[in-house]
Amino acid sequence: MLDRLDRKILSILQEDATIPVAEVAKRVGLSTTPCWRRIQKLEEDGVILRRVALLDPRSVNTKVTVFVSIVTNQHSEEWLRRFAELIREFPEVVEFYRMSGQVDYLLRVVVPDIEAYDAFYKRLIAKIEISDVSSAFAMEQIKYTTALPLSYIQLDKDKPV
Amino acid sequence: MLDRLDRKILSILQEDATIPVAEVAKRVGLSTTPCWRRIQKLEEDGVILRRVALLDPRSVNTKVTVFVSIVTNQHSEEWLRRFAELIREFPEVVEFYRMSGQVDYLLRVVVPDIEAYDAFYKRLIAKIEISDVSSAFAMEQIKYTTALPLSYIQLDKDKPV
DNA sequence: CGTGAAAGCGACCGGTG
DNA sequence: CACCGGTCGCTTTCACG
Image 1 (cartoon, rainbow over the protein chains, first blue to last red):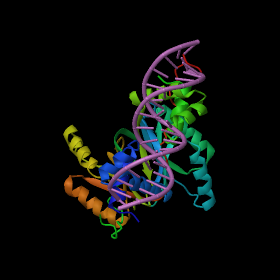
Image 2 (cartoon, rainbow over the protein chains, first blue to last red):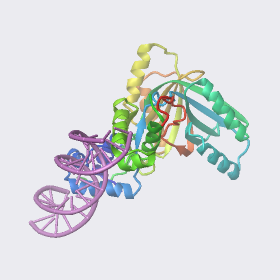
Image 3 (cartoon, rainbow over the protein chains, first blue to last red):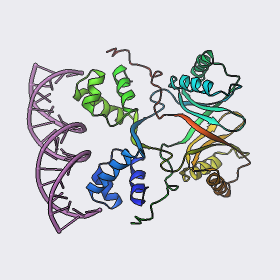
Image 4 (spheres, each protein chain N blue to C red):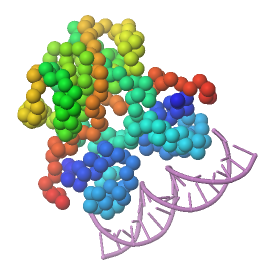
């Protein structure tokens, strides 16, 4: 269970993980040691999964995002397991969801351009049977954040601060 | 322009940004100082945008992802600017794309459950005129990574390692 | 770019009130 | 939790080859 201080800490670290503990502590109104202990606990409890560097898509030549909607007639557990494993091998696929509704699966794929997407697409369908695929191209990424909203956290009322 | 060493460094840091420079250096076959200098330059050049903590969606009560497709009849620059600004105020919207094809915009929204999505949706349409909206719910997030594929980087041939 | 080495900060871990 | 030390490791910067 988290309280307001934990939430403040998380909101800072999910925006910038390079900020020293002492500075985080100051911002949330805590001294260094207990703040450090909280961060440690947040990592142990798996609330903080990892710390990563975010790269500029342009700099690594992957400025085009394509959303791939997949409809399949294969609905077995086994097929999904194999499909998921396959997808994991494609670094171009950065997100992969099982959907409700008309579409069964949705992929977000990042590539340099349309040609590269076509090549990716051919490599994909060569590896697995998919009945119906449709691709939607993003012209512009207007917003992208890894920061999750923290307003839905159930706060621990015993520690109201 | 990047070379193979830069690419190796990036692949390490975009998976785990907590690895000490000395360890990164060892893995890419460099000594600490030049490796540190490269990382510094990658940050200056904006290849590395930032370092962030990734949180567990379940822990912050946002395990449901909804993809929102928007069709509008407003296609002016001004309308888009206002719309983008509005979206930026909604932390539930973690991704936002301008699309080609039938759909004009695509949002990825994270919320605790369907009820919360409905509340979000009402707040959104109360703020701006949107002609047609359709929502697709993700049942499961099978893959999610912030790591971009590095195979499309144009390598500097003058530094073949 | 490599090495070695200095200097300083920050993480980490005690203990006390 | 605040506060005070303390150690240790890592970052950061230097001089030099």
